[in-house]
Image (tube, rainbow, N blue to C red; front, top):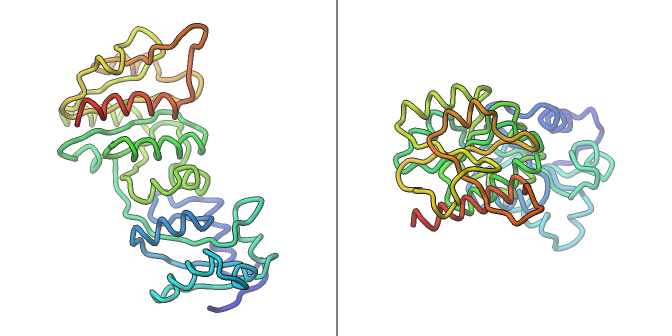
Length: 265
């Protein structure tokens, strides 16, 4: 393992650049922390590089074990002192290990082309943590792919990747700047579109979830636009006791996705 030092080192700049400007295609992902690095390693993703803090090499730490396992695969592994590591880690309290890994990129068209489709289309979900949590819920509930549309957070930013707890490394995820384009593709692929709305929709357990399904979820606050809701085939609403009127978007997704999962098994 080579040692690096200084904020101007080429490897430090590479990590800082990727933290500031995520790969738009989602091929290169910045991973911070032992959990994400382990998830990527277990998923057999290709590592571009890995950096471990020198303090983590002084004991039988998980970070040391991961660094050694990745190095055995011929990956460029570096060791950095605390100040240098703090410069390349995107978090306020550095975790001790970071990496750049390559995932398998996909497109919205490829996701919608799946045979037994159960897609989640999120529109204008602007908080990276919420989007990451949605990915986690989606993978756990059997969703076959996610499309982040409109003004949604970048699904490949380090914050979203961290929020997904590794799900973005395995689940097909794509971006689309236009929900109108996604809706047009859904119509072409003979997919039933079900829009989540705050009221006047079917109970999740009353919906027919069979066949090709795309579940639409709106972002924090306004939710889906009236135009998008009008273009959907059905609407679904989570029943709630008064005076509660809304739930966090990830909590809402979990309730609806698991109702669909029960019906589709």
